[in-house]
Amino acid sequence: MAFRKLLSSLGINAPEVQTVLDNHIARPGEQLTATVAVRGGGADVEVERFTVELIVRFEAKDGQEEKYLNTVAQHTFEAPFTLRAGETRTEKVAFDLPLEMPLTHALGRPVPGAYSALRTELAIDKSVDKGDLDPVEIHALPAQDAVLRAMEELGFTLTEAEVKPGRARTTVQAVDWWQEIELKFPSEYERGTLELALIARESELDFNAGGAERLTLPAALTDDPAALKARIDAHLRERFSAGAKLG
Image 1 (cartoon, rainbow, N blue to C red):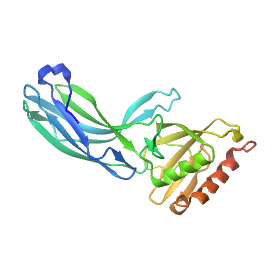
Image 2: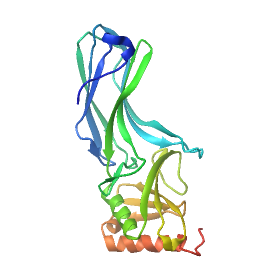
Image 3: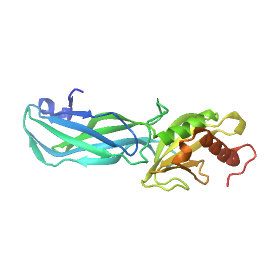
Image 4: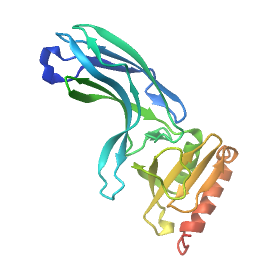
Protein backbone atom coordinates (compact mmCIF):
# COMPACT_ATOMS: atom_id res chain seq x y z
CA MET A 1 0.00 0.00 0.00
CA ALA A 2 1.30 3.46 -0.91
CA PHE A 3 2.17 6.21 1.54
CA ARG A 4 -0.65 8.67 2.21
CA LYS A 5 -0.12 12.29 3.09
CA LEU A 6 -1.46 13.50 6.45
CA LEU A 7 -1.89 17.06 7.72
CA SER A 8 -1.99 18.52 4.22
CA SER A 9 -2.21 22.01 5.76
CA LEU A 10 1.57 21.73 6.24
CA GLY A 11 2.02 21.67 2.47
CA ILE A 12 5.30 20.14 1.26
CA ASN A 13 6.35 19.67 4.90
CA ALA A 14 3.45 17.28 5.58
CA PRO A 15 4.46 13.77 6.66
CA GLU A 16 3.15 10.62 4.99
CA VAL A 17 2.00 7.38 6.59
CA GLN A 18 1.72 3.81 5.38
CA THR A 19 -0.05 1.02 7.32
CA VAL A 20 0.42 -2.52 6.07
CA LEU A 21 -1.64 -5.25 7.71
CA ASP A 22 0.02 -8.64 7.96
CA ASN A 23 -3.42 -10.08 7.25
CA HIS A 24 -6.53 -7.98 6.71
CA ILE A 25 -8.73 -10.95 7.76
CA ALA A 26 -9.02 -12.08 11.39
CA ARG A 27 -11.48 -13.75 13.75
CA PRO A 28 -12.52 -12.81 17.28
CA GLY A 29 -9.92 -13.99 19.77
CA GLU A 30 -7.07 -13.73 17.26
CA GLN A 31 -4.31 -11.13 16.99
CA LEU A 32 -4.34 -8.41 14.36
CA THR A 33 -0.85 -7.16 13.45
CA ALA A 34 0.45 -4.44 11.17
CA THR A 35 3.54 -2.42 10.27
CA VAL A 36 3.16 1.36 10.38
CA ALA A 37 5.65 3.65 8.68
CA VAL A 38 5.71 7.43 8.89
CA ARG A 39 7.89 9.43 6.48
CA GLY A 40 8.97 13.03 6.91
CA GLY A 41 8.13 15.73 4.39
CA GLY A 42 10.18 18.72 3.25
CA ALA A 43 11.21 19.93 6.72
CA ASP A 44 11.71 18.61 10.24
CA VAL A 45 8.52 18.46 12.32
CA GLU A 46 7.79 17.72 15.96
CA VAL A 47 5.35 14.83 16.25
CA GLU A 48 3.33 15.34 19.45
CA ARG A 49 1.27 12.15 19.23
CA PHE A 50 1.44 9.01 17.11
CA THR A 51 -1.26 6.39 17.62
CA VAL A 52 -2.98 3.53 15.85
CA GLU A 53 -6.59 2.78 16.80
CA LEU A 54 -8.83 -0.18 16.12
CA ILE A 55 -12.17 1.36 15.27
CA VAL A 56 -15.66 -0.02 14.76
CA ARG A 57 -18.79 1.62 13.36
CA PHE A 58 -21.22 2.16 16.24
CA GLU A 59 -24.82 3.27 16.39
CA ALA A 60 -25.96 5.62 19.13
CA LYS A 61 -28.16 3.98 21.74
CA ASP A 62 -30.61 6.90 21.94
CA GLY A 63 -32.80 5.64 19.11
CA GLN A 64 -31.59 8.29 16.66
CA GLU A 65 -29.72 5.67 14.59
CA GLU A 66 -26.73 8.00 14.36
CA LYS A 67 -23.59 6.21 13.08
CA TYR A 68 -20.10 7.04 14.31
CA LEU A 69 -16.63 5.47 14.45
CA ASN A 70 -15.65 4.38 17.93
CA THR A 71 -12.24 3.32 19.22
CA VAL A 72 -12.29 -0.13 20.81
CA ALA A 73 -8.49 -0.48 21.22
CA GLN A 74 -5.54 1.87 20.89
CA HIS A 75 -1.76 1.66 20.69
CA THR A 76 0.23 4.83 21.39
CA PHE A 77 3.86 5.03 20.28
CA GLU A 78 6.46 6.94 22.25
CA ALA A 79 6.15 10.67 21.59
CA PRO A 80 6.94 13.51 21.23
CA PHE A 81 9.78 13.05 18.76
CA THR A 82 11.36 14.95 15.88
CA LEU A 83 10.64 13.52 12.43
CA ARG A 84 13.44 14.66 10.16
CA ALA A 85 12.81 15.72 6.57
CA GLY A 86 12.68 12.58 4.43
CA GLU A 87 13.21 10.28 7.44
CA THR A 88 11.15 7.06 7.66
CA ARG A 89 10.21 5.54 11.01
CA THR A 90 8.72 2.06 11.13
CA GLU A 91 6.79 0.54 14.02
CA LYS A 92 4.99 -2.76 14.62
CA VAL A 93 1.56 -2.85 16.21
CA ALA A 94 -0.55 -5.75 17.49
CA PHE A 95 -4.12 -5.87 18.78
CA ASP A 96 -5.54 -8.86 20.65
CA LEU A 97 -9.12 -9.06 19.42
CA PRO A 98 -11.71 -9.86 22.11
CA LEU A 99 -13.99 -12.84 21.57
CA GLU A 100 -16.84 -10.32 21.38
CA MET A 101 -15.23 -8.39 18.52
CA PRO A 102 -18.02 -7.29 16.15
CA LEU A 103 -18.23 -9.24 12.92
CA THR A 104 -17.93 -7.67 9.48
CA HIS A 105 -18.31 -11.01 7.66
CA ALA A 106 -20.38 -14.14 8.31
CA LEU A 107 -20.87 -17.26 6.21
CA GLY A 108 -18.18 -15.88 3.92
CA ARG A 109 -20.23 -12.76 3.09
CA PRO A 110 -20.06 -9.12 4.21
CA VAL A 111 -22.47 -8.23 7.01
CA PRO A 112 -24.50 -5.16 5.93
CA GLY A 113 -23.82 -2.13 8.12
CA ALA A 114 -20.66 -3.53 9.74
CA TYR A 115 -17.26 -1.83 9.48
CA SER A 116 -13.89 -2.12 11.25
CA ALA A 117 -10.54 -0.53 10.45
CA LEU A 118 -7.17 0.53 11.76
CA ARG A 119 -6.86 4.30 11.98
CA THR A 120 -3.47 6.01 12.20
CA GLU A 121 -3.32 9.40 13.90
CA LEU A 122 -0.58 11.98 13.93
CA ALA A 123 -0.59 15.23 15.91
CA ILE A 124 1.80 17.99 14.87
CA ASP A 125 1.74 21.57 16.11
CA LYS A 126 -1.59 20.93 17.85
CA SER A 127 -3.16 19.77 14.58
CA VAL A 128 -4.53 16.22 14.48
CA ASP A 129 -5.10 14.10 11.38
CA LYS A 130 -7.10 10.88 11.69
CA GLY A 131 -7.47 10.43 7.96
CA ASP A 132 -5.57 7.16 7.41
CA LEU A 133 -8.07 4.27 7.53
CA ASP A 134 -7.22 0.67 6.65
CA PRO A 135 -10.30 -1.60 6.67
CA VAL A 136 -10.09 -5.01 8.33
CA GLU A 137 -12.39 -7.98 7.92
CA ILE A 138 -13.55 -9.71 11.09
CA HIS A 139 -14.95 -13.09 10.09
CA ALA A 140 -17.31 -15.10 12.27
CA LEU A 141 -16.07 -17.86 14.52
CA PRO A 142 -17.08 -21.36 13.38
CA ALA A 143 -19.72 -21.49 16.14
CA GLN A 144 -21.19 -18.14 15.04
CA ASP A 145 -21.26 -19.25 11.42
CA ALA A 146 -22.97 -22.49 12.49
CA VAL A 147 -25.72 -20.54 14.29
CA LEU A 148 -26.28 -18.13 11.40
CA ARG A 149 -26.34 -21.01 8.92
CA ALA A 150 -29.00 -22.72 11.03
CA MET A 151 -31.00 -19.48 11.15
CA GLU A 152 -30.75 -19.19 7.37
CA GLU A 153 -31.96 -22.77 6.94
CA LEU A 154 -34.91 -21.96 9.23
CA GLY A 155 -35.95 -19.16 6.89
CA PHE A 156 -34.43 -16.14 8.66
CA THR A 157 -32.68 -13.50 6.53
CA LEU A 158 -29.80 -11.42 7.87
CA THR A 159 -30.49 -7.81 6.93
CA GLU A 160 -28.12 -5.64 8.98
CA ALA A 161 -25.84 -5.46 12.00
CA GLU A 162 -25.28 -2.60 14.44
CA VAL A 163 -22.83 -2.17 17.30
CA LYS A 164 -24.20 -0.37 20.33
CA PRO A 165 -22.51 0.95 23.47
CA GLY A 166 -23.37 -0.44 26.89
CA ARG A 167 -24.89 -3.78 27.84
CA ALA A 168 -27.55 -5.81 26.10
CA ARG A 169 -30.43 -7.24 28.11
CA THR A 170 -29.83 -10.64 29.75
CA THR A 171 -26.29 -10.93 28.37
CA VAL A 172 -23.02 -11.70 30.14
CA GLN A 173 -20.43 -9.45 28.50
CA ALA A 174 -16.71 -8.86 28.89
CA VAL A 175 -16.82 -5.56 26.95
CA ASP A 176 -18.97 -2.44 27.15
CA TRP A 177 -20.60 -2.82 23.73
CA TRP A 178 -22.39 -5.48 21.77
CA GLN A 179 -23.27 -6.29 18.19
CA GLU A 180 -26.94 -6.56 17.37
CA ILE A 181 -27.62 -8.70 14.29
CA GLU A 182 -30.96 -8.03 12.66
CA LEU A 183 -32.77 -10.85 10.85
CA LYS A 184 -36.09 -10.88 9.07
CA PHE A 185 -38.53 -13.45 10.47
CA PRO A 186 -39.97 -16.03 8.08
CA SER A 187 -43.62 -15.30 7.29
CA GLU A 188 -44.97 -18.07 9.51
CA TYR A 189 -43.96 -16.10 12.62
CA GLU A 190 -46.08 -13.08 11.64
CA ARG A 191 -43.38 -10.80 13.02
CA GLY A 192 -40.98 -8.27 11.52
CA THR A 193 -37.37 -8.17 12.69
CA LEU A 194 -35.51 -10.33 15.19
CA GLU A 195 -32.61 -8.66 17.01
CA LEU A 196 -29.93 -11.22 17.88
CA ALA A 197 -26.74 -11.02 19.93
CA LEU A 198 -24.18 -13.83 19.70
CA ILE A 199 -21.83 -13.50 22.68
CA ALA A 200 -18.80 -15.77 22.26
CA ARG A 201 -16.76 -17.31 25.06
CA GLU A 202 -13.97 -19.88 25.03
CA SER A 203 -16.15 -23.00 24.97
CA GLU A 204 -19.69 -21.74 24.44
CA LEU A 205 -21.84 -19.16 22.72
CA ASP A 206 -24.74 -17.16 24.14
CA PHE A 207 -27.70 -16.86 21.78
CA ASN A 208 -29.74 -13.85 22.86
CA ALA A 209 -32.78 -13.33 20.64
CA GLY A 210 -35.07 -10.35 21.06
CA GLY A 211 -33.93 -9.63 24.59
CA ALA A 212 -35.45 -12.91 25.81
CA GLU A 213 -33.72 -15.27 28.22
CA ARG A 214 -30.38 -16.21 26.70
CA LEU A 215 -29.75 -19.67 25.31
CA THR A 216 -26.23 -20.93 25.98
CA LEU A 217 -24.92 -23.19 23.24
CA PRO A 218 -21.92 -25.39 24.16
CA ALA A 219 -19.24 -26.11 21.59
CA ALA A 220 -20.38 -29.71 21.19
CA LEU A 221 -23.79 -28.50 20.06
CA THR A 222 -22.49 -25.93 17.58
CA ASP A 223 -20.40 -28.74 16.07
CA ASP A 224 -23.58 -30.76 15.36
CA PRO A 225 -25.55 -28.91 12.62
CA ALA A 226 -28.76 -30.99 12.89
CA ALA A 227 -28.95 -30.81 16.69
CA LEU A 228 -28.08 -27.10 16.69
CA LYS A 229 -30.79 -26.30 14.15
CA ALA A 230 -33.39 -28.26 16.13
CA ARG A 231 -32.42 -26.55 19.42
CA ILE A 232 -32.58 -23.05 17.93
CA ASP A 233 -35.85 -23.82 16.15
CA ALA A 234 -37.47 -25.01 19.39
CA HIS A 235 -36.17 -21.99 21.32
CA LEU A 236 -37.46 -19.50 18.75
CA ARG A 237 -40.85 -21.15 18.30
CA GLU A 238 -41.43 -21.21 22.04
CA ARG A 239 -40.85 -17.48 22.29
CA PHE A 240 -41.81 -15.96 18.98
CA SER A 241 -44.23 -18.14 17.02
CA ALA A 242 -47.72 -16.78 16.38
CA GLY A 243 -49.55 -16.74 19.70
CA ALA A 244 -46.43 -17.14 21.84
CA LYS A 245 -45.89 -14.73 24.71
CA LEU A 246 -42.40 -13.41 25.31
CA GLY A 247 -41.38 -14.02 28.88
